[in-house]
Image 1 (cartoon, rainbow, N blue to C red):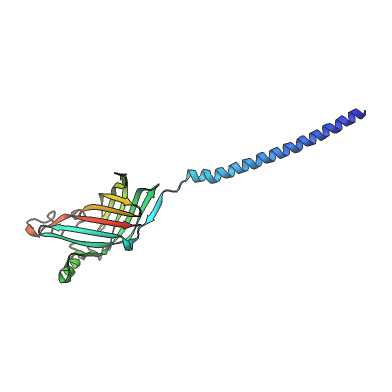
Image 2 (spheres, rainbow, N blue to C red; image 1 turned 90 degrees about the horizontal axis):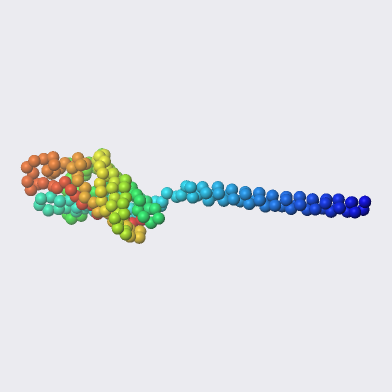
Amino acid sequence: MQKSENQERNYSLIYKSLTHLKTKINSKIMKKNILTLALTLVFGTAFANPVDGEKKEVKTESSTVTWKAYKVTGSHTGTIALKSGALMFDEGKLTGGEFIVDMTTINTTDLTGDYKQKLDGHLHSDDFFSTASNPTSSLKFTKVEASGKNSYKVTGDLTIKGITKPVTFDVSVYGSKATATMKIDRAQYNVKYGSGSFFDNLGDKTIYDEFDLVVDLEF
Protein backbone atom coordinates (compact mmCIF):
# COMPACT_ATOMS: atom_id res chain seq x y z
CA MET A 1 0.00 0.00 0.00
CA GLN A 2 2.77 2.38 0.94
CA LYS A 3 4.54 1.53 -2.29
CA SER A 4 1.45 2.34 -4.33
CA GLU A 5 1.08 5.77 -2.67
CA ASN A 6 4.73 6.60 -3.36
CA GLN A 7 4.31 5.63 -6.99
CA GLU A 8 1.25 7.88 -7.34
CA ARG A 9 3.14 10.73 -5.74
CA ASN A 10 6.05 10.22 -8.13
CA TYR A 11 3.70 10.05 -11.12
CA SER A 12 2.08 13.29 -9.97
CA LEU A 13 5.43 15.04 -9.65
CA ILE A 14 6.53 13.77 -13.06
CA TYR A 15 3.23 14.94 -14.61
CA LYS A 16 3.58 18.41 -13.07
CA SER A 17 7.18 18.64 -14.27
CA LEU A 18 6.21 17.60 -17.77
CA THR A 19 3.30 20.02 -17.80
CA HIS A 20 5.54 22.87 -16.66
CA LEU A 21 8.17 21.93 -19.26
CA LYS A 22 5.51 21.80 -21.97
CA THR A 23 4.25 25.24 -20.96
CA LYS A 24 7.77 26.70 -21.15
CA ILE A 25 8.39 25.09 -24.55
CA ASN A 26 5.07 26.37 -25.92
CA SER A 27 5.86 29.84 -24.58
CA LYS A 28 9.25 29.87 -26.30
CA ILE A 29 7.72 28.60 -29.55
CA MET A 30 5.05 31.31 -29.38
CA LYS A 31 7.64 34.02 -28.74
CA LYS A 32 9.74 32.74 -31.64
CA ASN A 33 6.72 32.70 -33.94
CA ILE A 34 5.79 36.24 -32.92
CA LEU A 35 9.35 37.41 -33.53
CA THR A 36 9.44 35.67 -36.91
CA LEU A 37 6.12 37.26 -37.87
CA ALA A 38 7.33 40.70 -36.78
CA LEU A 39 10.55 40.37 -38.77
CA THR A 40 8.63 39.19 -41.81
CA LEU A 41 6.26 42.13 -41.61
CA VAL A 42 9.07 44.66 -41.23
CA PHE A 43 11.78 43.32 -43.50
CA GLY A 44 9.51 41.43 -45.84
CA THR A 45 7.60 44.62 -46.56
CA ALA A 46 10.82 46.55 -47.00
CA PHE A 47 12.15 44.06 -49.54
CA ALA A 48 8.83 43.82 -51.32
CA ASN A 49 8.64 47.62 -51.65
CA PRO A 50 12.17 48.93 -52.19
CA VAL A 51 12.90 52.65 -52.49
CA ASP A 52 12.57 53.61 -56.14
CA GLY A 53 16.03 55.11 -56.59
CA GLU A 54 17.30 58.50 -55.47
CA LYS A 55 16.20 61.94 -56.61
CA LYS A 56 18.90 64.61 -56.61
CA GLU A 57 17.80 68.22 -56.90
CA VAL A 58 19.88 70.38 -59.22
CA LYS A 59 21.59 73.46 -57.79
CA THR A 60 20.16 76.01 -60.21
CA GLU A 61 22.40 78.87 -59.04
CA SER A 62 25.57 76.98 -60.01
CA SER A 63 24.20 75.23 -63.12
CA THR A 64 24.27 76.77 -66.59
CA VAL A 65 22.47 76.43 -69.91
CA THR A 66 24.46 77.84 -72.85
CA TRP A 67 23.05 78.16 -76.37
CA LYS A 68 24.71 78.79 -79.72
CA ALA A 69 22.74 79.62 -82.87
CA TYR A 70 24.03 79.87 -86.42
CA LYS A 71 23.29 82.05 -89.41
CA VAL A 72 24.81 82.38 -92.88
CA THR A 73 26.95 85.33 -91.77
CA GLY A 74 28.07 83.98 -88.38
CA SER A 75 26.69 82.89 -85.00
CA HIS A 76 25.53 84.12 -81.61
CA THR A 77 25.86 82.68 -78.12
CA GLY A 78 23.97 83.22 -74.88
CA THR A 79 22.55 81.71 -71.74
CA ILE A 80 19.21 80.72 -70.19
CA ALA A 81 18.63 80.11 -66.47
CA LEU A 82 17.28 76.92 -64.99
CA LYS A 83 14.18 77.42 -62.86
CA SER A 84 14.27 73.94 -61.33
CA GLY A 85 15.54 70.46 -62.05
CA ALA A 86 16.33 67.01 -60.71
CA LEU A 87 18.12 63.85 -61.77
CA MET A 88 17.07 60.34 -60.75
CA PHE A 89 19.56 57.59 -59.94
CA ASP A 90 19.29 53.91 -59.05
CA GLU A 91 22.41 52.35 -57.49
CA GLY A 92 24.49 55.21 -58.87
CA LYS A 93 23.14 54.88 -62.42
CA LEU A 94 21.20 57.68 -64.11
CA THR A 95 17.58 56.66 -64.67
CA GLY A 96 15.64 59.88 -65.22
CA GLY A 97 15.46 63.64 -65.07
CA GLU A 98 13.15 66.62 -65.33
CA PHE A 99 13.84 70.33 -65.76
CA ILE A 100 12.10 73.66 -66.13
CA VAL A 101 13.90 76.50 -67.91
CA ASP A 102 13.12 80.16 -67.26
CA MET A 103 12.74 81.49 -70.81
CA THR A 104 12.38 85.07 -69.55
CA THR A 105 16.14 84.99 -68.82
CA ILE A 106 17.27 84.20 -72.38
CA ASN A 107 20.00 86.60 -73.45
CA THR A 108 23.11 86.98 -75.57
CA THR A 109 26.66 86.93 -74.23
CA ASP A 110 28.62 87.74 -77.40
CA LEU A 111 27.18 91.26 -77.86
CA THR A 112 27.22 94.49 -75.88
CA GLY A 113 25.40 97.78 -75.84
CA ASP A 114 22.59 98.50 -78.30
CA TYR A 115 23.30 95.38 -80.37
CA LYS A 116 22.81 93.17 -77.32
CA GLN A 117 19.68 94.99 -76.21
CA LYS A 118 18.15 94.71 -79.69
CA LEU A 119 18.84 90.98 -80.14
CA ASP A 120 17.82 90.11 -76.56
CA GLY A 121 14.51 91.87 -77.10
CA HIS A 122 14.02 90.11 -80.44
CA LEU A 123 14.56 86.69 -78.84
CA HIS A 124 11.82 87.46 -76.32
CA SER A 125 9.38 88.57 -79.03
CA ASP A 126 6.85 86.49 -80.96
CA ASP A 127 9.37 86.20 -83.82
CA PHE A 128 11.27 83.79 -81.61
CA PHE A 129 10.29 82.44 -78.17
CA SER A 130 7.26 84.55 -77.11
CA THR A 131 8.46 84.62 -73.51
CA ALA A 132 5.60 86.82 -72.30
CA SER A 133 3.06 84.09 -73.08
CA ASN A 134 5.48 81.14 -72.76
CA PRO A 135 7.71 82.01 -69.79
CA THR A 136 9.02 78.45 -69.29
CA SER A 137 10.19 75.47 -71.30
CA SER A 138 10.53 71.96 -69.91
CA LEU A 139 12.36 68.71 -70.47
CA LYS A 140 11.43 65.31 -69.08
CA PHE A 141 13.51 62.18 -69.64
CA THR A 142 11.55 59.26 -71.09
CA LYS A 143 14.37 56.79 -71.77
CA VAL A 144 17.92 56.45 -70.45
CA GLU A 145 20.47 53.98 -71.83
CA ALA A 146 24.06 53.62 -70.66
CA SER A 147 26.53 54.24 -73.51
CA GLY A 148 29.74 54.09 -71.47
CA LYS A 149 31.08 54.04 -67.93
CA ASN A 150 29.73 57.50 -67.11
CA SER A 151 27.84 58.25 -70.31
CA TYR A 152 24.20 57.90 -71.30
CA LYS A 153 22.05 58.23 -74.38
CA VAL A 154 18.87 59.98 -73.27
CA THR A 155 15.52 60.52 -74.97
CA GLY A 156 13.17 63.11 -73.55
CA ASP A 157 10.11 65.25 -74.20
CA LEU A 158 11.11 68.87 -74.79
CA THR A 159 8.39 71.52 -74.60
CA ILE A 160 8.96 74.98 -76.11
CA LYS A 161 6.15 77.49 -76.75
CA GLY A 162 3.64 74.86 -75.62
CA ILE A 163 4.79 72.37 -78.29
CA THR A 164 6.25 69.04 -77.14
CA LYS A 165 8.62 67.01 -79.32
CA PRO A 166 11.02 64.14 -78.57
CA VAL A 167 14.74 64.86 -78.47
CA THR A 168 17.75 62.58 -78.09
CA PHE A 169 21.01 63.75 -76.54
CA ASP A 170 24.13 62.68 -74.62
CA VAL A 171 24.66 63.04 -70.88
CA SER A 172 27.87 62.49 -68.92
CA VAL A 173 27.88 62.18 -65.12
CA TYR A 174 30.94 62.62 -62.91
CA GLY A 175 30.43 62.75 -59.16
CA SER A 176 28.01 65.57 -58.37
CA LYS A 177 28.19 67.11 -61.85
CA ALA A 178 26.58 66.28 -65.18
CA THR A 179 26.87 67.68 -68.70
CA ALA A 180 24.35 67.35 -71.53
CA THR A 181 24.83 68.37 -75.16
CA MET A 182 22.00 68.55 -77.65
CA LYS A 183 20.88 69.99 -80.96
CA ILE A 184 17.41 71.54 -81.13
CA ASP A 185 15.45 72.13 -84.35
CA ARG A 186 13.58 75.37 -83.68
CA ALA A 187 11.31 74.86 -86.69
CA GLN A 188 9.60 72.01 -84.80
CA TYR A 189 8.57 74.53 -82.14
CA ASN A 190 7.16 77.12 -84.54
CA VAL A 191 10.12 79.50 -84.14
CA LYS A 192 9.94 80.88 -87.66
CA TYR A 193 12.00 84.03 -87.94
CA GLY A 194 14.69 83.80 -90.64
CA SER A 195 14.01 80.08 -91.14
CA GLY A 196 14.38 78.51 -94.56
CA SER A 197 11.75 75.98 -93.45
CA PHE A 198 9.10 78.73 -93.57
CA PHE A 199 10.43 81.40 -95.94
CA ASP A 200 12.04 81.37 -99.38
CA ASN A 201 14.83 83.50 -100.83
CA LEU A 202 16.26 84.63 -97.50
CA GLY A 203 19.80 84.63 -98.84
CA ASP A 204 22.40 85.77 -96.32
CA LYS A 205 19.62 86.65 -93.86
CA THR A 206 18.98 82.95 -93.24
CA ILE A 207 19.21 81.75 -89.65
CA TYR A 208 19.69 78.00 -89.45
CA ASP A 209 17.00 75.94 -87.72
CA GLU A 210 19.31 73.90 -85.51
CA PHE A 211 20.95 75.46 -82.48
CA ASP A 212 23.20 73.88 -79.85
CA LEU A 213 22.61 73.61 -76.11
CA VAL A 214 25.29 72.74 -73.57
CA VAL A 215 23.90 72.13 -70.08
CA ASP A 216 26.26 71.94 -67.10
CA LEU A 217 24.60 70.73 -63.91
CA GLU A 218 25.59 70.57 -60.26
CA PHE A 219 23.52 68.58 -57.77
